Length: 532
Image (cartoon, rainbow, N blue to C red; front, side):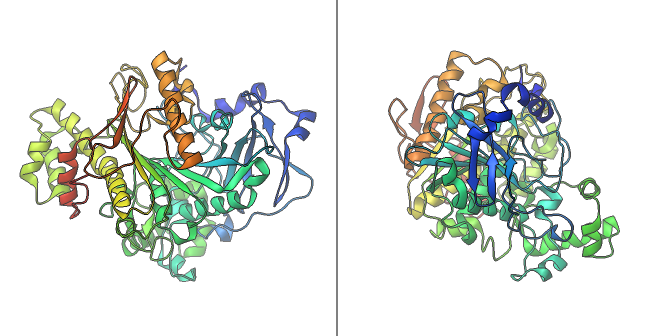
């Protein structure tokens, strides 16, 4: 079965055949600060899942667009046996290669999920997964994010929901006026920090070590990791960080999910006028679906430098060593742009018009780095350029800046494996088209859930064992090396120390596409990647 068949609805409706309820629930009861919760056994032997645990109060009514508040306590035993609703967003295509969320949606979504093999024995490493989705979509219940496989190998796995889109990043001068810090927006990042505080205070009940927490995520989840590295409110809540494809390191723009206060507040005022709301109170009374639909430009609101939660540009803070001094593992995939609409959309002139604006004043060199004489070449180069601008350069910049700061070890990778899905796969992002090592193709291997995309070949099975093993080793020790795993040197800019991961062998090598990324670095006014 392909991943397209695994919608959220079909996954949740199948829980009854996977999990056992009734009197057995008492065997899966733990006490957290809010009260007693009962989980349910999973199909993975000795692993229990506790799902839909509230880590914050529902951000509804007057609490819409405010920092998350502490969750309520309860008496008796609360069932934690199914996922909560997903954060409000536009429904995803059921045929997406990412197995998108299909609802139900609610503002009452600030929950997390825990998978563990029990609380006995020595405390175990904790891994907290932050989903991607460009900060406009995503949910912790997507099947690829199931934590049972890593829990069976000694990890306490946590996945979290956080607000996205108009409800997660809306900025407005009136909201800033309500804040003691004069800030608005960034509510989704605040949610993530609240979830990390919950983990610190409660994870020991599940056998987890609150002193050994790894945050990790892909795409917007990786950008989130980059933000947490520089957010003072997150300091001390995690001890290792993995960023899979992304980091907010370049010029502020919607492309790299990094904004600035004044433009986003102005966009908030424009949005209010567009929906005809008299004031902030009227906006808070509006139906959430109306707000989501009205936000027709889904990329209009995203995290920003607000001077408080994100005190300055993340690149500057990391390059100066003013970030959490934790081991970092960061990397990207060979074909990051293949699933997105390419720059220029196949038109040669449009491609170069776009690239000239992004790479000014290096238009002549742009044509050398991205040669395109016809539509086919323009499509291919447009995909490559999109991947460079949004993911590749930012991941390389995080690795280079953190390594030069030298406050903790950095490990960097390049995922080259192209056999995740068949070349003729019928997914929305590429019907009948080879997606290569596409954006997100490593997730199932790292989380050991790749079987959900279909039967595993021996090569896929071996790669899944390797990559998940490296992530687990990093969570345990801050180093991805271990028995039976490929040698992965500490990243040193300018040396062949990036692990190139594929299905047959994984070997250290130099920065891939160095000339292209160096050109983009110069266009950004930042030469740190040139010698990486």
